[in-house]
Image (cartoon, rainbow, N blue to C red; front, side, top):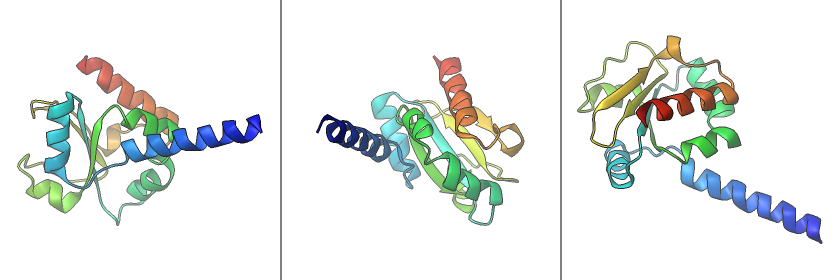
Length: 136
């Protein structure tokens, strides 16, 4: 019986982390949450045609370690076409890109494709933590 309870508790924790950390799809809502909670906003700019983006979507972002880190952020997934049209007027010449916006709406950091960590969850967590620590 205790083993069942432990498995159930783990599944509940994993579900809670996933529910709170998934990327939203609405930039304005993510900005508002960032301001309200005082969290950095992580904007993941991607394209469905990008093989690196597909790898991130399938192998990196769903990883429990990455999801735990994302729970500390306000995060949004934005298609490259939408990113170009946003009020930030980003130049999206390659994807994926990560843009980090502070709670006041200022761009704090940009990680373009060539600066992204290896497509390993541990490396992504390290990179995201380093950005948060630099902001603190």
